[in-house]
Image (cartoon, rainbow, N blue to C red; front, side, top):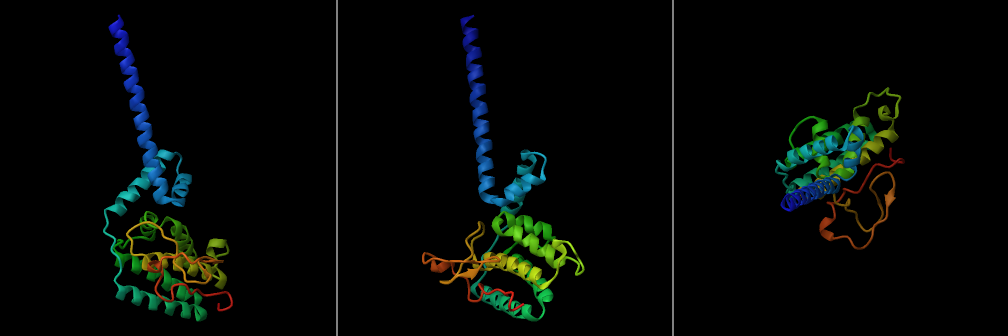
Length: 229
């Protein structure tokens, strides 16, 4: 009887230990997803009925992204894309709608040049979220504004100059990450110069501690302003 009692005790101990290990593995996987996807983790979680299905979707996105080879741009390509972006900024003053649509196309072209597959916008945004989760929400917003009908009355459908300027800024944030960063994954702070430059709708002051290697090519910081538009 004593032997049976010890056997049961050992079985219970093993079961408890196994449960603890499984919980630890689950928490570790969750932490990695949260770290990789950042705000995208919360967005996907809000779209699902339970956490398990949300995390399954994020793991699938991560697996699809990790199966790709994302290459850095050459210096020549970076220079070419930078000049094209500067041209779009100048064009925005005279034709905001056209310039913003071309900015959307240019971001997609840069993604393909780096190794992201040519696919639907939804697929591009998902893959981008695995590398640059902090700009992908703005990317979706910009695309929604850019492709909205001109007579749209809801906020996402507005195509007035101010709405297009906001979309253009969001595209620029994505462009900076793709052209100004040669890493395969992970958001980096949008590189800036020594002065305050707009990284969204407001100017953000910069410090003196920036690594010079992370500075973008000339012209990446300029953005159409309300006065120019």
